[in-house]
Image (cartoon, rainbow, N blue to C red; front, side):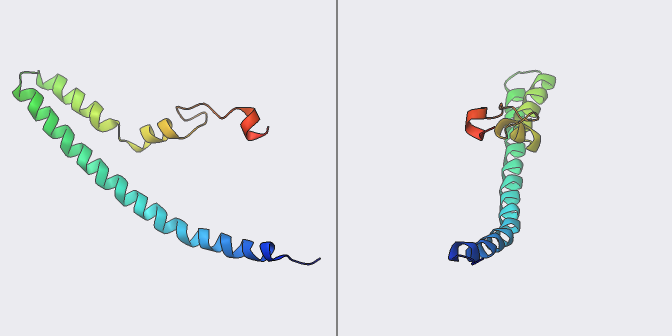
Length: 98
């Protein structure tokens, strides 16, 4: 059996993808942590502002915590990843071909 040029490129393509994945995960992780830090700082500022404007500290803390929790990794996964663990339903069978 003769390998076509396309078959020869498959191992190279897989190798390029495998080499790229760690750096992509690393960069995505850095961006996520930076965004999480900004959200945490923003939540603290919002909480202080609410307390200064007369909102009870317990309520202000609860609202700020809810704001910060919207950027948790689990919440993001539920929101954007389809499946039984996610917030979105699975794609219809006619799309997946099942």
